[in-house]
Image (cartoon, rainbow, N blue to C red; front, top):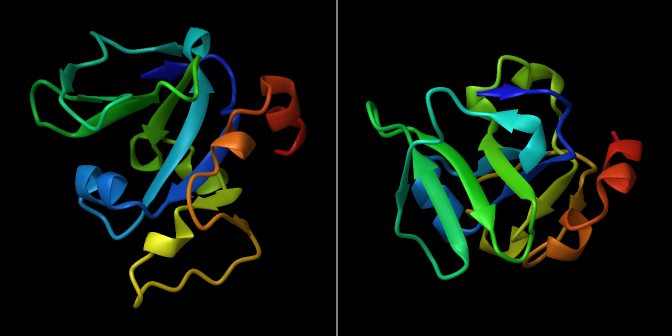
Length: 132
């Protein structure tokens, strides 16, 4: 995967679905505009998920490659672990904090939402880039 621009935002998600997809206690993802991403050879295989959610996986190893959400049109979420620059991409929001595993404590001052942070994440690309 190659990105022609920096991500719009970087987010943690504590929801059960994202934890199961990543196999991790919390998902960390970077949101890009669709037009700014290129997947080579392709975006992988799409597997069934929750209604309104499309997730793709590597055809060879099964690693999660992307997530798309109907309520966040034009955005593609990529797991931070796939990105060479992951160390430089600091999460800006915690989504579904109410579903956080009780033993997981991330000590930061990042904005937290009990449920979806879709209103925050759906901000215009210009607004999101101004915050990074």
